[in-house]
Image (cartoon, rainbow, N blue to C red; front, side, top):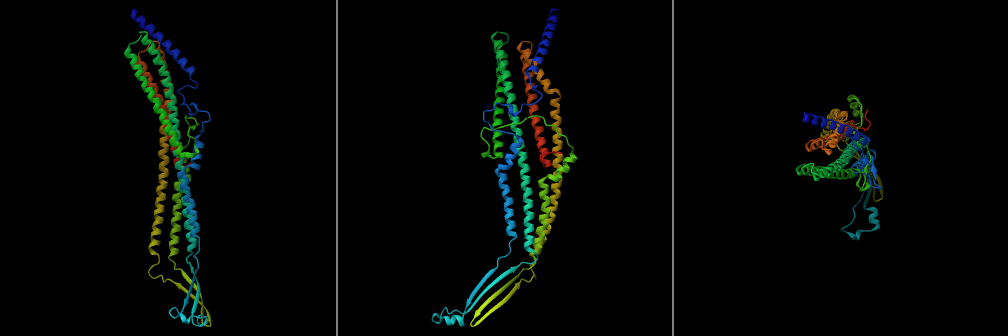
Length: 444
């Protein structure tokens, strides 16, 4: 009977402790810890630290990333080739002297040169047939257009990489914030456990177990700090290493971003905005231009020449013309190859078109799956883990819960918080994957 009453009293005390712990935890949280992951800006910042938002990071990368700047020079190179393609052939200046008395130098005289030697001067010019220059220029312009879209696709990929690295740094900073909080809280519990051990309320084994568990929290802090430093370093390289200070940090909210939009609308937007698809479509036009150029090259050019001749007392003008006879070589091989190149470009365009639709669908499904996982955490599991840890912590510090129960609740809380942060990062990365697949940051 006495033991039953004692257990009943302990149960009542434990419930009172739990109610007090929950109220204390709710009052201490502003906002509740389980409701959102800490933003990057919540970390302690040094005075004068350069803070960069995601939009600023993307803009800096588009302006200063060295690989992208190198890729943009290909547009300028193609524009220079347009100048070359539009040039006309240069005229050719010819001259000759005949019947010079090289081996009878005694015959050299003004009278001999005037009456016996012959002097010719001529100008020849290649007249291109088949509008070769116009076709060369059009082919060069179409290739420049292809290059512009390819560079735009490089910008799309760079934007995605910057966003992914930005989210990784936010995850590392949020994880570091959580690790520091857990370490501080657990250190307080270790101090209380040490006091209880010295007072004889618990054994040495329980105290040593508690101290050994502290190592895990210290390790978590070190690993999170390393991930943050490495993430900032990788992101700096994308932004343009010289443009960012060594001690820069991120300014942003590592939080859930709701998104609404249908798959069909996103696929339709992708078909209009994806630069790699635009490059493939422009590639068909470039292939047609190359085909027309090869047909023009098959036309034989005419060379015209005008000569002025001085011989004795005669001063004559002669006209010459020449043209290859297109009996064997009519550029048949290159014309046929260019025709196959059109088919190749068309097939590549169809492949990219299908790839765009596939990318959007895969990214959309990935976003939905990650959205569902984040929703599960936010539906109450975070608060449950918080309350469970707080109740057990409160009870343990007052001797109403065992060490095993406390460590189990602590592990569950830490695992839930880390799992939520990783799920949130995966969700945000899936959202960036969807933006990249659609080809625009403004989703429909």
